[in-house]
Amino acid sequence: MSLIADLRKALGDAAVLEGEAMGARPASDMSLTGTALPRALLRPRSTADLAAALRLCNAAGVPVIAQGGMTGLAGGANPSGNEIAISLERMRGIEEVDTASATMVVKAGTPLEECQRAAAEAGLFLALDLGSRGSCTIGGNLSTNAGGIRVIRYGMAREQVLGLEAVLADGTIVSSMNRMLKNNAGYDLKHLFIGSEGTLGVITRAVLRLHPPPGEITTTLCAVESYEQVVALLRRAQAALGGIVAFEAMWRDYFSFNAEALQLRFFEAEHAFCVIVESTMAQDAIEEFLGACLEDGLITDALVAASHAQSRQVWSVREGHPTESLPNLLNFDVSLPIGQIGHYAEACTSALKARWPDAHVSFYGHVGDSNVHICVSALYGPGEDMHSVDDIVYGVLGPYHGSISAEHGIGTLKRPYLHLSRSPAELALMRTLKQALDPRGILNPGKVI
Image 1 (tube, one colour):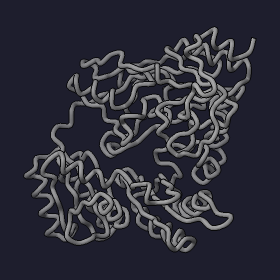
Image 2 (image 1 turned 135 degrees about the horizontal axis):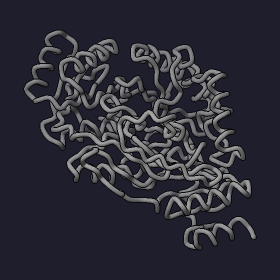
Image 3 (image 1 turned 180 degrees about the vertical axis):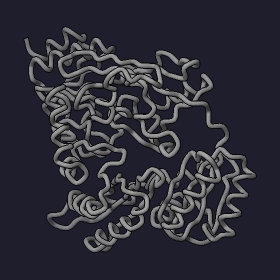
């Protein structure tokens, strides 16, 4: 009996799609670099179904790829054409919200926004937040250790997880659904799977940590004239405003391009940087803080959002380029020591402009968590492609001892550059873990390492 026939027998015909029945979605994540459909697409309904599927695929030596919301930007969920893709979209739902322990038990295929709503309805707050919240799924968020706009206060996705369940390559179910904040009973196995991009096991359920609602959030937009002042504003805001909720810096080219495209204007003049600061402090305290910053010359202008609509306008500028006006647009996601980000941005821009003088190059980032994003749009000459841009962006990063991936993962697109951020000993240990948990190498092959 063929593998596909075995899978149909184990999961049912409706859970095994082939050919045109799969549609185009399984071919590529949002990087749009995938070009091939998988051999088949499985749609299990339960952890037991997934375990049965992996057991069969492992026995046959056929590679598999777990797919969530397909919102990634590193090619981590893209098939090459020979794999079996497994969509977790039917493994969806909130199993429980425990207000006493402030936890949520959720299935991996549940969209992030659905989890946020369920937490809010229970009077609690799920801190993880991404622009793709309506499409990305918890399984994908955890397998890539997603970051987002609340990291400065609450940490990465990893910090939001108390326990999880995963299925190994051979179909073994590892259920470690811990609900306690303190649990030092041996190795914390969840960290094997969080951030491993489906190469060590497939996450199926998780216990998420919830928080008290942050209260009313006030959005401010500050005009700043140097990167050194951006860092000084960050430290002053953290000291004066307590636990700020977000701190997002936009370099002039990024802010001006998006604001113009959206036909929005916030300040009379253009400024070197525009910084979004969100805080839960009372508005009079925020206004006093801004007044002192203006008086000291730390900022040159400021705007306090007067409504949710105006706050959304500010964030709409931060949330991205209208891609139709920028050919070959590439988005990079790197991290490096906060004090070096300004120097790196200047060096990277200079190197890219030296190669493509007419290129659009712009920067924005969370800054407070060491993360900066780079947008590059260039018209390539003969023999040039996106990898020519990669070589420059990551090559310039090397001397700063930064990371080629702050929050988007490695996938296939960053794998050739992983050695710039990880030592030979670290890479060897990664391969040891991969061999131990997936000896036949069927889980998301060719990704990460």
